[in-house]
Length: 487
Image (cartoon, rainbow, N blue to C red; front, side, top):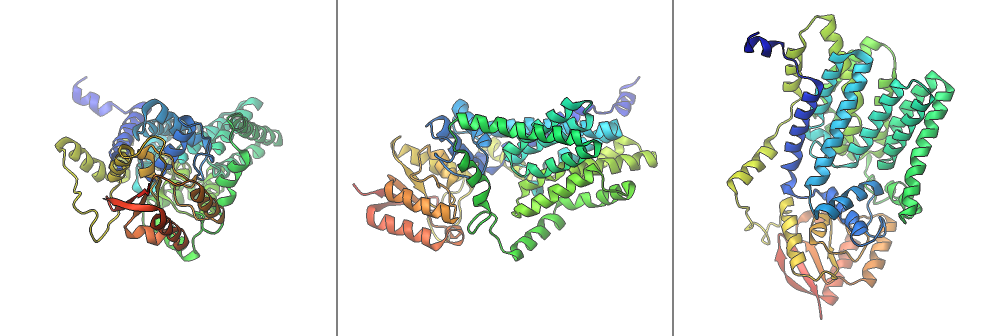
C-alpha cells in the first residue's frame, strides 16, 4: 500500500481528535488575558490563597458567590506553584477533555462510532468559541459540566441499581461545584422515572449522598455552611447582586448571545433533530432545562453557555450522523467541513505568541494622563508586583473597584472580605464595618471611567473621605492613584 493510499484510508481515532482539541484549547487559554489571572480567576486565587496560606477559610478570607471547591483548586495552585494562571487552565483543559470523551461515549452508545466522532468535533470546537467563553476553561462551568456529562453516561449505561445511585452521586458532586447543575440533574431524574420509580429514587439518593459528602468535608474544614448558602444562593438575586439587571438589558443580551454569535450555527441542526425524532426525548429535555436555568440566572455570560453545549452538540452530532447515513456521505469530508465551520479565530493567542517571540515592549506612556483608560490585564500583574515590593508582608492593601487582579498579584490581605466590589445590602454593611476597623497601609483608587460607572456613589464617597482624612497621595501608576497612610 502506497503512502498516498494509506493517507486516503486513514481515519483519526477519537483520542487523536481529543488530543488535538486539547492542544488548541491550551493555545487559546494560555496565550490570552495578558498572561495573567483573569478577573474571576484572581478572585478565586485570592480566596484560595487565604485559605491554604493564611488559614482563612472561604467567606472568612474573602467573599465571592462561588463554591469552596473552586477556591480549593486555586488555593492548591498557589500552594504548589505560587501566583500563577497556567495550572488552573491546564487542569481545566484536562477535565474538559474528559468531558469531550464522555460526550463521545454518549453519542457512540446512542448512535454509533460515527456519531461519537462527530460529537467530539462539534463539542470540542464549540468550546473554543469566544461566544462560549472559550478561554475560560478554569471556570466552575468546566467542572459541573464534566460531572453532569459523566452522570448522563452512567444513567444511560446503568445495568443495575448501583448504576443509578452512582450516576446521582456524581451529579451531586457537580452540583457542589455549581448550583446550576440542578437543571441537568432534573433531566436525568425524569429519565430515571421513565424507567422506574425505584431508579428515580436511587438516583435522588445518590445526588443527596454526593451533596452530603461535600457538606461533611466543608464542615470538617471549618467552613460556615450558612455562609455557603448565603453567598452561593440567597445574596445573588437581590438589589445590587450580579443578577440585578433591568428587563431591557436582559433582552438585549439574550439577543446578542443567542442570535448574533456562533451559537446560531446549532439551530439548523437542532431543527433537523426535532424533525427526525418528532418527540421530546432525553436530550431535548436536557437542553430545555439547561436553557431555563441559563435564563433564570440571566447574566448571559459567555462561560455560562458551556452548560448548554453538551446537549446542543449531541443533538447536532446525531443530526449530522443521520444525514451521513441517509445520503451515504463520506465521513472524512463531512468532518473537514465541520472543522472549517466550527473552528474559531485564534487572532489573540497568535498575536500574543508574536509578542513573546519578538519581545515587543508595552506602551506605558498612555497611563496617568488624560484620557484615563482602563489598563490592560497584563498591567494588573505589574501593578500588583509593585505593591508587593513597596509594602511589608503584614501590611493590608485595599484596591478600590474591581481590582481583584491587582489584589491577587500583590499577595497582600485586603482589610475587608469584600475585596472586590459587591453592592448588595449585606455586602455594603460589612464593607463599611471592615474598613472602619482595619486601616490598610495602602489604598489604590482607579482614575478610569469604569470605576464611576459601575461602583455606587456612596461607596466611592466613603473611600474618598477616608483617603482625604488619613492618607497622602504617593503617586500614580497604570491609571490608579496610590495613597499611603499617614504616619
